[in-house]
Length: 477
Ligand SMILES: Cc1cc2nc3c(=O)[nH]c(=O)nc-3n(C[C@H](O)[C@H](O)[C@H](O)COP(=O)(O)OP(=O)(O)OC[C@H]3O[C@@H](n4cnc5c(N)ncnc54)[C@H](O)[C@@H]3O)c2cc1C
Picture 1 (cartoon, protein in one colour):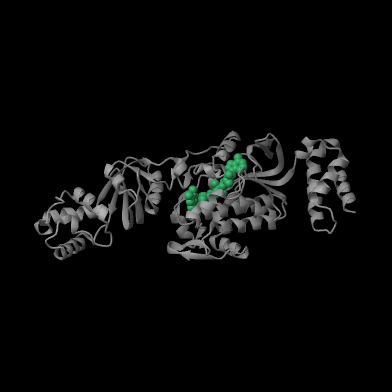
Picture 2: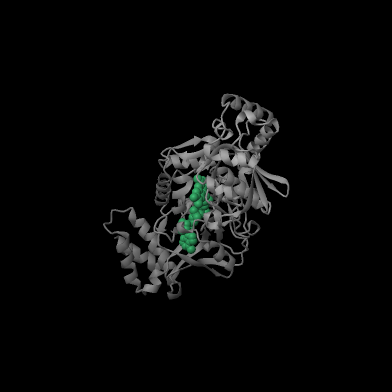
């Protein structure tokens, strides 16, 4: 009789009144779990009620639940950690303050979710900006191909695009979220939404649970913090994990925006708002030294510049105490200055008799022509046949060296990732367990790691989530 068995297990575990709290919850949970598979006719909630009645527990006592592992944060890192630990037989709770899981994941890759990068470890090394060595164990324990395999086993086929960027074949981030939810359910993780964690509870330098915003507590032997960074706060990443870790004695490195649009001083930039440039080469120069060079696409905005090339440049600037910095844009990087000069001459022959401003249509987007002519210092009203050799050279120089002054970055909330976070020297890289508090683990963006665009940041979240989850499990058995 399942009810009797549930009672027996609970009573056996709760041999003394003092030990009722932790033992009750565990016994009930274990038994409920076992009963799930039996054709008992009793739903777990009914068994729960029977046990509560038989032990005369107060509502406060009932609200206390004990888990092997409590994962805080239902982003990619937290979901992966919880499912991995659950798969190892741990009783896991995943606590997420939002009404659903993976809110930030949903908007990644403009809704297409660049889920990882298909490059090799050297690619990862080149593209990880902060603490790459710390990440070796994580990346080796759960690599890009393993993520792709896992997604496939969960029904999500992937495709590889330019720059080895991996996306779900459907181009829908929601498919990745659904797959991860399935992974959680398959591994019996208790998912608790609308559940905000305020504090990690510690006794004798060991984790013993978490305190929720409603003042109730959840007991657990281990806690993994996967609360993300401090950008796009509306997705739930409000930096809570930094606060919690700090209060436990961890050091949090300066939090700065990375992969973030840049504010530009030159007023003419605003006139080009909305204009995208493809195949340009952008150099970032700090104190006369080129600190980064990126090729690709950029965009003019009302405040300055954005787009893939600019986002990457912003992360490089972070590493070089950024400002004052200049961006030097080569609009025609495929041509040397001499080749470009010959190209301009050909265009001038083609547009012979026309005004200069009407003779550059083959070379530049319309909106950029007056800007480039102004920067070159050549009179816009001249006819092409009147342009001197020196003026043509000035024009070529302007085409290959558009200089922008970086005045600052957009705020952290507009950054794709947060640079800075929990200091890695306080975390064991092989297990992701805290060196300060035992039983405390970290995964994802809350750690002081960040990478360039291309799927690297999500792979970091998945890899650290996996390693944190598996380490918590190995440490338990
Ligand atoms: C617009 C945008 C596009 C991006 N596109 C890509 C891309 O295509 N490819 C890529 O690799 N990376 C991309 N990124 C970066 C990537 O999304 C992050 O690096 C990744 O989401 C980090 O995962 P995480 O699990 O560590 O944190 P998050 O995804 O931030 O998840 C943290 C979770 O913790 C929850 N939480 C926080 N505090 C608490 C609390 N106190 N209690 C309970 N829950 C809490 C939050 O609600 C949130 O759900 C993009 C980022 C942005 C903003």
